[in-house]
Image 1 (tube, rainbow, N blue to C red):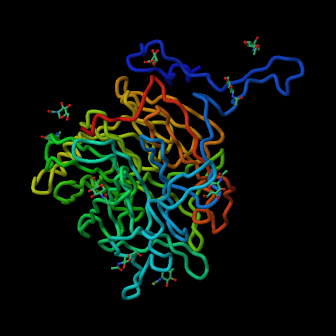
Image 2 (cartoon, rainbow, N blue to C red; image 1 turned 90 degrees about the vertical axis):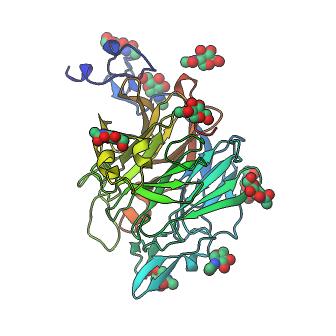
Image 3 (cartoon, rainbow, N blue to C red; image 1 turned 45 degrees about the vertical axis):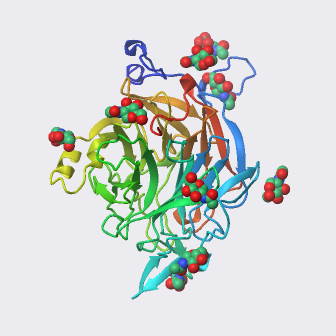
Length: 439
Ligand SMILES: *[C@@H]1O[C@H](CO)[C@@H](O)[C@H](O)[C@H]1NC(C)=O
Ligand SMILES: *[C@@H]1O[C@H](CO)[C@@H](O)[C@H](O)[C@H]1NC(C)=O
Ligand SMILES: *[C@@H]1O[C@H](CO)[C@@H](O)[C@H](O)[C@H]1NC(C)=O
Ligand SMILES: *[C@@H]1O[C@H](CO)[C@@H](O)[C@H](O)[C@H]1NC(C)=O
Ligand SMILES: *[C@@H]1O[C@H](CO)[C@@H](O)[C@H](O)[C@H]1NC(C)=O
Ligand SMILES: *[C@@H]1O[C@H](CO)[C@@H](O)[C@H](O)[C@H]1NC(C)=O
Ligand SMILES: *[C@@H]1O[C@H](CO)[C@@H](O)[C@H](O)[C@H]1NC(C)=O
Ligand SMILES: *[C@@H]1O[C@H](CO)[C@@H](O)[C@H](O)[C@H]1NC(C)=O
Ligand SMILES: *[C@@H]1O[C@H](CO)[C@@H](O)[C@H](O)[C@H]1NC(C)=O
């Protein structure tokens, strides 16, 4: 009885809130005398049809980005994988993109200095790519695949215990590849005062309009530092000058939730790295999405239930403004709980902020017009949605990688089963890729 008044059903912009009620999609009841049960039950499914686009039979994927010509790019954090950035070539295979030679060989991914492990500092090779993002053609740039290399591979000792070496300048970088000629045309690296040795570059968004305040006019990148070691925050990069700076470092809104215990497929999921006591997920800031007018950044840590936002102007403030951090903190909005942990975000032309919900095998979206979180799609095949990307075709593409079953979270035991997958589903309200930020 109580629940009926609490949760809004899916509704598009401007729906009458007073008429909202709890959604019943996915509930099944069969009164036939020979039915297995007369009880109403949850079949685990709602929303638009979920199509199986691609199967991963080799490396397990992380990030995904779809280009206007339909090409799908994927990332694989290393490790032991032969290559870290790929392109889908057919239903069951991917190939290194733009070529294999750019990938640093596995035995050169890390190094040791005075007994401390560091990732490679090679700025002209791929080390471990976490995320990719496609921006549309502008008056000064071709359609571009932006590649975010963490410079921090996961390595294993002789006993198979995982660890992540610190970053050294040159390793963590943002690379621009023209999708017209498939060639790298820009590379940005970070000083160790902006990208700390224990930072981890996790996601990226762009505003390429010439009139964005506080920039050189050549565009700005907003990057996620999700640092498991505890100093997460935003890193901004001026694409004209190469200057970078941080904002909201260790703000409560970017920190991991304390001892958050997620539930996967109905099972409580502690973080169990081989060689360490059982623990909790340590990741901070994870999902980000810029509003369609570029004015507001939505975000949340992986292991909190809250959705936050901040005026993007506060992120663009430089350290030369003595009050930049205090004003940024004071301008954070808390939109309340969304009903679970979320990792990757995406956004569409309706202004909806999609949030991938690994604990619900679902994708929800936040509608800024009514301030509520809504159901979008749920399916038992969505076993850890890791990255989402909206194509020019109006579909949301999802990477499915069974992440909680990987050995590094699971006492060294690999419980994943091939294939991984790319799924897609049609967006509501004719939503499509946001292009308003790429004039
Ligand atoms: C789940 O139940 C809904 C009815 O609420 C139905 O429309 C849908 O087709 C069902 N899905 C599956 C996979 O059976
Ligand atoms: C099953 O019976 C209930 C109670 O009479 C009814 O509300 C429901 O609509 C019926 N379901 C189907 C699928 O006929
Ligand atoms: C897919 O591409 C791979 C690699 O090029 C190739 O080995 C395989 O035969 C292709 N499969 C199909 C069904 O075309
Ligand atoms: C960086 O890696 C590339 C590709 O493996 C290699 O050609 C180049 O020599 C490396 N640079 C340095 C400074 O080690
Ligand atoms: C890279 O890390 C692994 C695991 O700790 C270690 O065995 C190896 O010696 C390291 N490589 C270098 C060159 O330091
Ligand atoms: C590829 O495109 C970029 C961006 O337009 C340009 O800067 C670069 O010169 C081109 N490279 C080649 C090899 O054509
Ligand atoms: C929000 O940020 C603006 C711009 O930096 C600043 O002027 C304003 O004082 C901030 N708001 C608060 C409550 O600090
Ligand atoms: C979506 O597009 C179709 C075809 O152009 C149109 O008929 C329909 O009204 C649109 N729906 C919404 C919600 O805008
Ligand atoms: C900035 O430029 C875009 C197009 O490039 C335009 O739509 C927008 O209105 C401009 N904003 C301001 C504040 O001038």
